[in-house]
Amino acid sequence: MTKETLVRIDGVHKYFGEHHVLRGIDMTVRQGEVSVLIGPSGSGKSTLLRCINMLETISAGRIHVREELIGYRETRGRLHDLTIKEIAAQRREIGMVFQRFNLFPHRTALQNIIEAPTQVKRQSKVKARSRAMELLDRVGLGNHANHYPAQLSGGQQQRVAIARALAMEPELMLFDEPTSALDPELVGEVLSVMKDLAKSGMTMIVVTHEIGFAREVGDTLTFMDGGVVVESGNPRDIIANPQQARTQEFLSKVL
Image 1: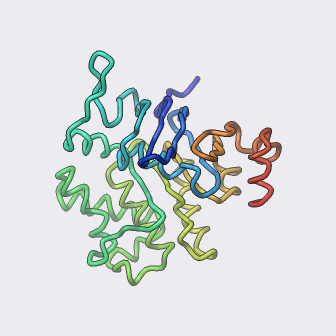
Image 2 (image 1 turned 30 degrees about the vertical axis):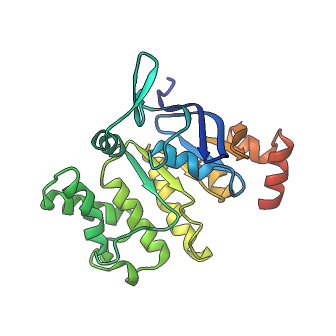
Image 3 (image 1 turned 180 degrees about the vertical axis):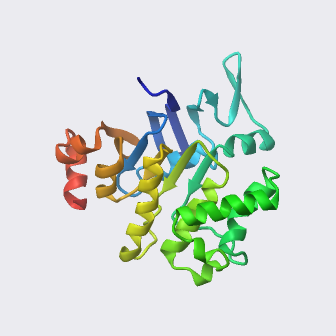
């Protein structure tokens, strides 16, 4: 049985001034898939994620998540901006984990995780705390609930950030180079949590330089360069036998 499409990106362009960052991106991600984006710095990968999560507005094209147009309302072929409140409602369904962990430094791991459910979803503190402890256990930090970010390693902070995103019960998780700010020996603990998420059926779009993760966990691999999709397909096939010269050149330098 074919899984339904969860994310559909059609002809997306993004300009920053005169700088044309995304040049007509088309992409689909099905329910439960892990879609991995690779490419050199400046290729538009992170910008694409930020457009999906409405941290950046697109200049042209359409992004749908479960058939819902993201960031806009379309009336008679014309797009109208959603209100801040409407965008916030859409964003609740999309979790995002950044390169830098963005934890509140003055709040414990537990307090970081319960902040959004209690403030945005109006969950009771008892329910939010119970769920937060489940998530901390899931990411291997059940005994670090009362630690502040400064008392945690980079890998531990990133795992708290993943738990914080999951606390909103999103149907889509975006990861923007989640291991790039970590010391090499801490990368594995974060990737392990992400592999567990993938096994559980979470739909994920992951920007990463971890080619091993892409090969092992990814359902699709997309290589971007210069704001366009150069090559996309099965990760094992592309990594072993890239068809495009630019993909061959890139992989020869990172493998």
